[in-house]
Amino acid sequence: MCAVYIEELYRSDIMDPRSCDTFVALPPATVGNRIIFGKNSDRLSDEVQEIVYYPGRSYEPGEKLECTYIEIEQVEKTHSVVLSRPSWLWGAEMGANEFGVCIGNEAVWGKEEIDDKEALLGMDLVRLGLERAATAEGALDVIVGLLDKYGQGGNCMESAMPFAYHNSFLLADRKEAWILETAGQYWAAEKIDEGIKNISNNLSITTKIDREHPAMREYAKTKGWWDGRREFNFAAVYSYFNPSRSSSSGDRFCEGYKLLRKHKGNLTAQTMMEILSDKPSGINMEGGFMTTGSMVSILPQDPNQPCCHFFTGTPDPARSVFKPFIFVPQIKPFVRTASPLFGTDDPTKLKPRFQTKPDRRHELYKKHEDALVFLETSQKNELLKKMKNLEKKKLEEVESILKDGSSASSGLTMLFANCVEEEMNLYE
Image (tube, rainbow, N blue to C red; front, side, top):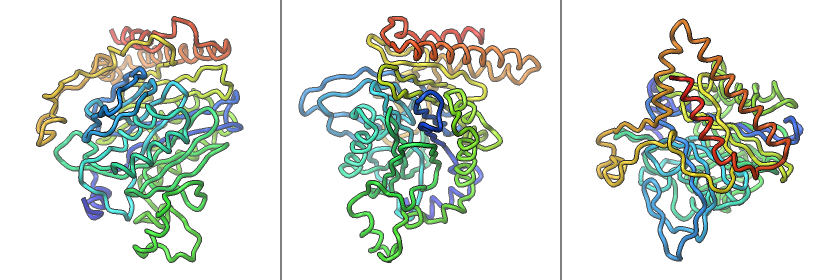
């Protein structure tokens, strides 16, 4: 796929690639000595986002792993993960693992052409980083290693129409965060120790580069993008447009930063939920591309406190419920937020791919879909108030758990599932 096609996507009213925003706030920008992570996954409006849990597993030497499009080598042991993902693929838009590592990815475009061959999706790399690393920087190592070995590529939506991109990632753990931005096999990474950061659909790493692909600068010289004398600016060198003038993603990138800065010093999980729900800024998107799933995580720097991750599993965070999840032993696979499985008959697996599109709606999605219709009636305020009261109640429960400093309670195994049931009961 050539850069011309991507430029056409930018000009299209239907396929304007304006999707996704990921945020992180670190002390002293937050309340309570915590790192707060947040992401909106903005995808095609009819795409279903599911919330799934996978326990860690051990594997025999030589075992293979089937990702969305390609098969790769499996590792000896994987970590437990909770994921929010488009239900047709293997990877994830965002998620967390048992060690408190969180990752979200963004679509980015630049001068480096996008290869249309099937490889690892950026969303596959999100899940692989979570399954294989115990720290944010460790996940960065996993991703760039896989990127070097297998490459990135493939159709990023469930459609016969091709839509591909390179990826950027925001990775966080209890201590720090990293931004990783890619251009084909080349990449740059920036470490974040404090304050606020957000990424959108434009390259944002400039001259502060803490890690990089060893051939990144020399490659830019051979392409004529950098003369080798000026200070190296990754975004300026690898972007095919001026990052400061990018219309849709650039405006949203700036608006997201403004919202973070507005609450700097007082950022909480609830504040992050409000940022993700903000429609005037464009962060909470509507239209052909819309916010189909959202995530907020609390990562206490105190190791005695558990990390907590909130997911909607439904579109539009302003009209959804953020439901809490905490990693504890004996968690069972989720039922109400997992989409139907189609096995080898799945149109994603058959070639040619995407000839049909099955109904992937999970139980919560269907109930919420009906509720959205009701929210358009004159009684919408009553239902929406109940939904947000449930969300507030769960935030208070999580604060009590964090204050107690223990995640050993057997009741936490059903924390997310029980909240899903409570939400579905509201829609009856």
